Image (cartoon, rainbow, N blue to C red; front, side, top):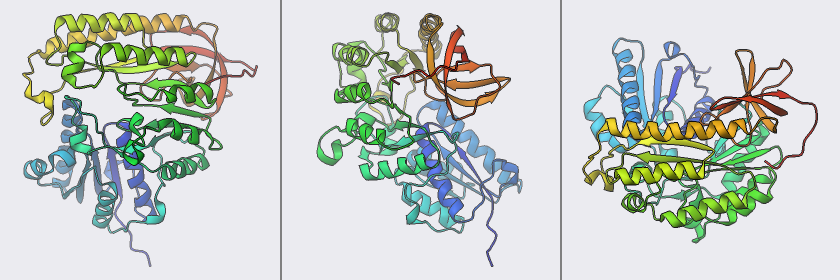
Length: 441
C-alpha cells in the first residue's frame, strides 16, 4: 500500500537557468509520486527556488519567503524549503533572519540539493532520470542549459560567488537531454548558460560552442536552435559560421554588451575594448545575413561619467540593436565594484535607463515599420484575446517582441508563414498565407 505524500508547490524566481533547475527538481518529485500543485492553497509544502542576482531579485525572493513562512505560522503550510542563488549566497544570514524556514539549500551542487529536498519530502533520488525534466514552458520550446557557473571576472556580477566557476556539461549529456526534449515534442531549443561561449574550455582548453550547436542541429524534430548569453570577450568566431551555414540554427544572438566606453569596460573588467567589441558585433552582422542581435546594458555604474553615458547613447543610436534591455547598476556585496562608491543617485540611474529605452523604442518602431509586407516563419506560442500570438526567428520567448495573427485555424506549437501588414513599437501584426516559403532561420 502506497503512503500518500504531501502536495508541493514549487515557486521559481529569476532567470531561465533557475527555471531549468526547477524542472529537474519537478521530474524527481513526480517520479516519487509527490504531487505538484499550482495553487498554493492546496499545498502542504512549498519549495522556493530563489534568485539573488540584483537587489530587486533579492527583494522578491525574500518577500516570497516571508509570505510563505507567514502562511506556515497560520497553519496553512507544514514546511517551507528554500533553494537557489539567494540561499546559496546568504544561507547563514537567512538562517538567522528567517529561522522559520525548515531548510535552506544551495544552487551550486544541484544533485545534492535535489537529494536533500527529496529526503525532506520522503522521496529518493533516481539516477535513471538524469536528463529528464518536467517542462514548465509550453511543450514546443525548452531552455537547454549547457554549463554552470562563470569564470569571467566582471566587477559588478555576483554570479561566480553564487554559482561558482564555469563547469561545462559533458556533450553526451547535452545531446541526451536535447533528444529527450525532442521526443516530447519540443521544436525550439534555447541554449543558455552563464557564458555559453566558454563551453569546452574547462574540458580541453578550447571554446567549442560551435561543436555543441552543430550536434544539436542534427537532432530530429528540432526546427529552431536559439543562442543566448554569448559573452563578447574572446568570442569564438566559428560560431558565426555555424549559425550562417546551419538551416535550423536561428540567425539570432543574445550578446550582453553591458557598456561601450573604454573607461567603463575597463572598470567593469569585461576583458574587451570598445574597438574589439565593435569588431565582434560587426562580424556578427556581416557574417550572418539578417542577424537579429539582442543585448543588455548597465547604466549608472559607479565609474560611468556623463561623457561615458553619452558615448553609450550614441552607440545605441548608431548600431541599432534589434532587441535591447537595460539594467540600473546594483551594488552587490563581495564583488570588485562593491568597493567603489555608489556615487550615482537612483534618480539619475533611472533617467539614464529611460533615455536608452526611449532610443530603442524609436529604433524598434523604425525596424518594425520596415517589416511591412515581409513574410516570416512564425512559431505560435498561445491564443489570447482573439489573437494567435507567435514569434519569428528574431525573438526569444518572454523577453522579445511578438507577432499577433487574427485567425481561427492555427495550432499552438506549429509553424506558419505569416505576412506582416502592421506594426507598433514592440509588436507586429500579420496574417497567415498559404504559400510555402523557404527560409534561412
